[in-house]
Length: 441
Image (cartoon, rainbow, N blue to C red; front, side, top):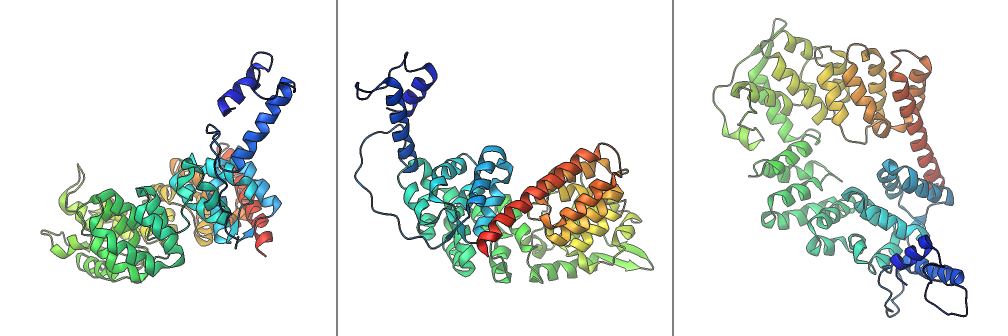
């Protein structure tokens, strides 16, 4: 009996739709018997619409990862049923602790991931253990989890599967991952190159700078954008040193004022280092270049009052935008705090914070919660945008700080529901960690 037939019999009643089976048994028993068989087939990874008998498979390989506790497994069930917004983070926590999901939950986990996004499917592969790879081989819908060897998946999988495979390799062996990407780089199409380049993020280090520098000159914009994002995450890179030297030539501080020399012609080396020559509509060429000069320069080279100096210049809009982008791109917490404090750049800074991906570090989370209460009146839209995503991106360790703000009842009434959501979500995320850390101890 296929699943649609089983469902139809259950919904219409056994008097209207008699299930097949031994006529010696009443219809109700036959329905339950068929349901139990389909339940076992589901746990075995057999598609419910394909009842054909198959030969017995080989046994799954031995497990090497520790299984999460029953409390953590129950949390997974709750997440899949009620809190899908926590699914990706729970998987990441399990992966970081080198734990695995109990076998009984693997079919539901695979199906949930299949209907989710690529990052979830990627993480599921690492938390299912040997049993998941074995189980996924029986159902083509779960092919994304059927590769036990990521290098094999990188060679023969779909574009999405290959990107996931390269990330898996990078987590365990960054040098090997970089070498594999270099081997296939020239043969890949533009968007695939961009996706594979982004997969370098796990294990990112200065050893990747040469590859990222070469990607800055790629013919495809999406590849260049990924390279710019990653290369600014490298500490003390040659890239940041070159842009620091260029910026100091074009922007100088003299007698408390910012002296700006307008660039008139382009240097080919700027293009090789990521400069986009064509400005967006409505922005002048020199304005666009200066904005990028500041955006590519690490903010620590500027004096602490740079935002104020920019406001007294004739180029305040592009330079302020560039400084905000630089602080976010280089993940400079101190400068993010300064820009939120400065009224002239608060709105731009809060907008970029609202787009900053997780995870936010404990330091950045703490600094942000220190700044936000004082900005709610004058910068309503920016604070709302940050609080809309903060529950899932703040580090859970700042829960006491969030509760102090909530309990103070300071600020406008509209703020309270947002703060309550922040506190409740942080509590849920802390509970996830405690359950998994007990297992990990």
